[in-house]
Length: 455
Image 1 (cartoon, rainbow, N blue to C red):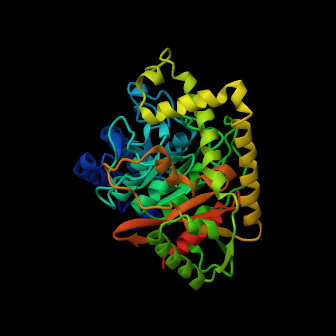
Image 2: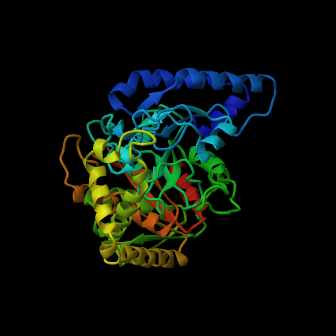
Image 3: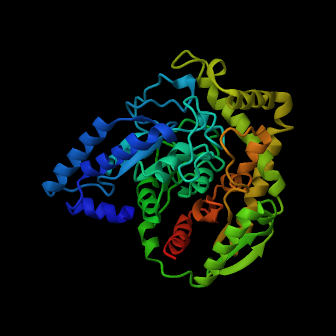
């Protein structure tokens, strides 16, 4: 059953919202202990909200477009009365006192929040191994990492603990775990979804987005999450389409779909084989495939991480132990501390021109180049990540871990929309196809996702 079909059943009184919650609670109680996707669950509050929705439907009152759908939310996004820990000891006692804009929208449309998902500490990672609350196992490839930093959100979807999960994506943190767990993850155009209420990792790169098991779930989420927020400085004014219309697309009608030579060159052969099969499918459904060059692939990771270090250091200065939580340097793990120290160093006046300002110049170069490539094509496709998820317990040095992000950071640096959909498997391990588009052309990505989903 697709998410769209489920919403129709709920609104037509064929499925009770309470039953939807209870079905997920059964799965959570059975699976979450071993997977560790959800850090906190509030069944009582979820059932109460479901009962309220059912009363409205029974009385033929108007209900929202998300009526009865169950959401899990990454624990770095504020939800009132839940623990917003960012998977760190620093904030282990911080209870959300307000709802982020995206949460307000979900609640206004009668969506049900069931709990908070695990992540890399402060979203600083690519594997969800750095969580203070323990790593998240991959339900689709047991014994391997779930990816990160939104690993809990992707694992919650892959193990069917909720209808839609909300994550954040700074350099691939939605798309990376979506690829590893074999689900669909979407990073909207930068500024499309309000960041108000998100704990910053890197404010000029962060974007909130949805994860789901089918394209209709992504479309329903985007219909509600994308809107202008006058209280958020990066928020776009955008006359958005009805994203659900994308699932009525029949073919690509000769749309130009680009592959990038350099993306293929730096990706493992096992992954390339699966991706090549997907590209053949795209051609079969009417896409015109063209190969392009992206000449700044070597700049992508250093540019991203230099900006990330400085902006993360700045954002963590509020965690000084005075207002809430512990002083971050006294409580955080190794990766968070590494980024704080590097950010502090680069931020010093004598080094800012040497590193940070050059990184900003490099970002402008990358943004110009990726938009130039997109000018004459509709979409760019390729692997989401260049290597398969490693086994839990394998020790990677920081540069090996950062290498997971080389293909995903480009969309964040360019501010463009990008999504990951399962392309197939390699030895039973999911492989994701990344689809990138022009700013505010998120809809075209969903069209291609839908066509791949139904074939």
